[in-house]
Length: 308
Length: 308
View 1: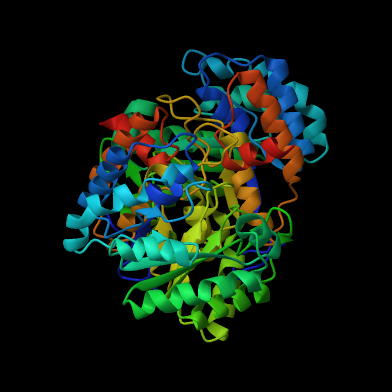
View 2: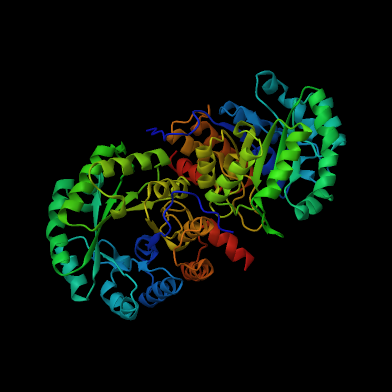
C-alpha cells in the first residue's frame, strides 16, 4: 500500500553503486564474468544508472583492475539506454575510459584536506587542478560528468566538516563543468538537520537542487532518515548499493552504503516511482551474496529472502 | 556537531523496551540478576523510562516468569524517579503488578482481528472488554496506563491495515482511560507517508499528538526514517530497544526493534535532548550482547564499540 507524503519528488533516480563502490571494497577481486552478470541483473531489475567500474591504476584498486575487460561486455546494456558511469581519477584514466566509448564519467573529490591527502595524495586545490582537464576533455567528448564529493559531513581525522567548506569545493567542481554532484557522507555520521543545512547552503550558493545527488552510508543506521530529509528538500537522485555492498572492513556483514533494497522499500511505500522491481533486485543481491559467501547486510534483503 | 532541524520537538522521551520486549524474545530466559543489572545500567545511562517486565502467565512468556523476583530488586530505581512500566494482559496480571507497587502499567491491544485472535485469543472487541477493568482499576490505584497498539500499519495475515480501523481501536483504548498510546509497526513494513497519514487521522479523531508514542521495527530498515516522520509531526515519545534487542526469530542478529543507540545518534545530531549518554548506553548493550552470546544488530553499537 503506497501512502504518499506531500512535498516529495514524484520520481527518484537511483544511482546504483554496488558494482563499483561495493566490489572495490571486497578483499578479493570478483571474476569479471560475475561482475558483468551482476550489472546485467541490476539493469534487468529496472536500475537505469549502474556505475560499472573504475579506471584507477590497478595498483590502487586491484579489485577493479579488469575495467578494460568488463566495460566492453556491457555494450548491449549501454545501447539499450542503461547509463553505465565509470570513475576516472585523472587524464590517464579518462583516456582509458574514452577509448572504450564511456559516455558518463565521474571524478572523486574530497571536501577535506586530510582525506584529499590520504586518498588522492594532493591538496584539495591540487586535486581540483587535476580534475580540470579531465572534466573539460570529458565534456568536449560529449560525456556527462558527475562530481563525487566525499566527507561532506564528517571526516574521521578532522571531525565535523564546516558547511561553508563543503559548499566551496562543491561550487568549484561545478565550475569545472561537472553536470551533477554526489554529496557523500563517507563515514556515515550525518543526521537530518545537517543534511538540510548543507542542501540549503548549496542552494544559497546558486547550486540548484536538481544537480545534487546524495550518497549516504549506513554506518550509524542514519542513511535512510538522511535520505528522507534530502527528499523533503527536493533531492531526486539517490546513490545506493544493491544489498548494501561496500561494507566497513571491521565487521562481517557490517554495512557501509545504503542498501538499494531498503531505499526502494521506502520509495515504493511513498508511491515514488523508481522503475525498480524490488523482488528482482532482492534476488540479484541474494545471488551476489552467494558469490561473495556472506549474507547481505540489507534489512530488506534479509526479510524478503527469508520469506521466499 | 548538533545541527537542529526546524519544527522538531526540543526533547524526546525514549521509552526503553529492551528489557521486556527484547528479552521476551530470547530463546532461553536470562537470569534475573542479569536483567536487574541490565535495567540498572540502562537507567545509569540516562534512560528515564525503562519497561521492566511483563506480568503475563509464565506459560506464555517463560522468559519473563521471574517478574515477581525482578521487580522488587528495582525499588531503588523507582524511588529515584525512574519509570519502570510493566505489561499486564488482564486483571490477574494487574493484581500481581499492583501487589508489588507498580505505578505504570501497559496493556497490549491489536489493531487487527487476526493478531488479536492469535496473540490474545479474542476478538478486538473482546480484548477491549478485557482491558476495561484493568485500565479502570489501574487508574483508580493511581497508576499511569499505556496502551500498546500493534499492527498499526501492516499485518502479516491481513496485509496493509486501514488507517480508519487503527484510529477506531486507538480511540477505544483512550476512551477506556489509557493515558498514552504506543503505535506499533509490529512487522516493520511502514513507510513515512503512512506514518504521517495515521498521525493526522488520529489528530482528526481528537487524539492530541502529546498522547502518542511510536514503536517502529527495523525489519525493512525503515524504523529511523519513520521516526523522523513522526518527530516532524510533533511526536515526542519514541520506543526503542537498547542494542536493537528483540530480533526476528529467523536470523541471528537480525533486527526487530529500533535500536536505542541508532535513535540517540540521530537525536543527538539534531540537538534534541534525551538525557541519554550514548557511550554509556553502547557499553551497556555491548555488555548485554556478551551475556547473550551474539553481537548487537545496532549499527551504532557496532560502529562505536569497534572504535573503543
